[in-house]
Image (cartoon, rainbow, N blue to C red):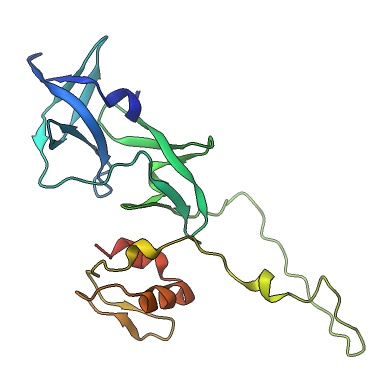
Length: 215
């Protein structure tokens, strides 16, 4: 296996060992899970990579229709908008598929956790473990004479959800209708994202959907 940093700057050859060029950047296509290699200003899909001592052989190199976002250096967020770190590297297998995303703080995420790779990278929440037994809900006893304590009263700051900075979405165009918390369309297909759209998306828990469908 290779890393994205190892591919960057690497000399690429075809199946006949003829030089193609040097990789300037490595991009990521979320739809296919494949990496794209930018060589001499053009992006290429690769079916297979063979790592040699001083170069890499790329099998079935096909030019891509458009460039995809570069992964390295992107900010990584979870579904609640909390920043997890910055993408520093990734592990690629011989089929040019990104297996793991590596962050600057040592965190690692499998490719299946990547929900969106664009201006930022969004990471899905982990699936609940099936091995853990379900915890029984504790019944709360209501006492009319009991006074609320510091532990039972939630302050506004504790109840407030924290979000990352998603203002980069403002000005992008929605490719589908997205509804708000009340089932009303908060943005129509073809409309531009505004600050009000972003506010409604945060309230309605639609940030992920908005990120995936704002281009």
